[in-house]
Length: 533
Image (cartoon, rainbow, N blue to C red; front, top):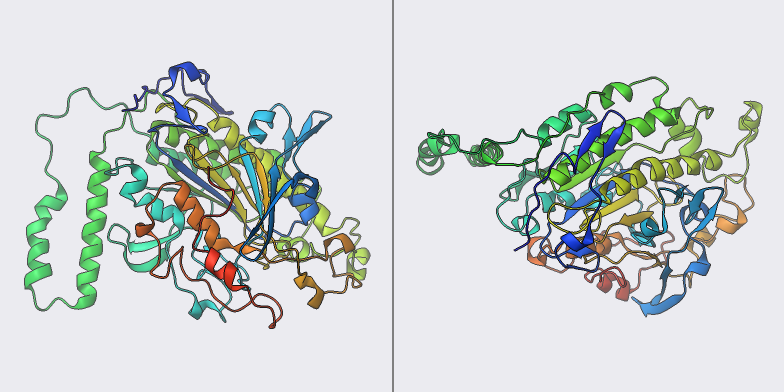
């Protein structure tokens, strides 16, 4: 059995400017670990999803020189290599977007990151809210929606899995949904039944903190603990559920869902947590992010995301939550970037290789792409890397908290807004020793350029010549199944009858004559090559 070290003020000290951990990770005091994770320590899952996407590959991914290995898989050649970085003027860079101050993005941190390219939702999904975590039905594309089965997102599969939690769930919050929701779950998640619903998120760090932190419990339990509400209602419930013939089928479902929610409430109220002495936050992120200039105020954005990250670290250290989903509508924008509607003026124009006459007449001097990709760089440095740094500490269960976690950053679209080929995917942490880190993998099939039927490279709205190659890759659902494998969730809990993480919509992406090879269809039931240890 792994010894759980008590969480003390020395391990977790908070201030208004962020979280500071006084005690460093001491390997000699931790249980023996394997492949970057502690044996027996709980796994944690953190998803960050950024809306839109649209960054060109030259900014989003490492160079081809990184790809030093290759193998044949699913009917084409895939490639991988170890991540490398360079340092110039105090900035370390894996690629332009994955860059930051070298004091934070150290060699050690680069070794805990992986970059995956060529993960496709193999149909035109348009805007979507649940696609990055598996509910492809949550799309604005009404034409294909009827063909897509609503599914819980993978964060909610973990949140309600006893397998993921290692037994009876004892955390306060099944999952933290922060800022913008990309999470969907059953209306009765404990039974895995009912309608699939979008779950609410909060951007108020004080509210989130109150949900995951409790005061130190008394040494002795009360002499006369109150009876469970569910126990008191059970006789009435059984009478209604089993005996009353007037109860219709819909009302039976409604009653079952109500009792499940009461049971979940009682579980939370009776959960005993030991979390030491932690100061509550005082600055309110909801108020800070409501400022009129927030979208172009990098310092305010950095402060807000830092405070939200503090809550996440508190929850994981206190073990009051193990599943976190974070949503952001778009990237950070720097002071001086101007637009009336960034979605139309930047996201939709980011593919352009030159300015239109209308833009020139309006005094625009910078390509929308060159306003867009630095915003994702800021998102990486001030949100993703900041959280990585704060998690790179001793885990009370043994080992390192980041190594025992899996962080996943995905963007809603690939190189073009609404496009779903090569959804940018960056991971950090080793999932307790099951996820391979420090590598760049390119799953694309480079034997055929599907862009040829779309653009000539001659129009101002076409991407520049070095960006007019577009390749299909492996299915995104295969990545989701691989993540669930890494979190050691039994496939019986999520695999569909035909195998894998659900059936994808089969209409080919792009020209009608292009058909995904049968080998690629078959491969979606497997774990991704090179991803797992």
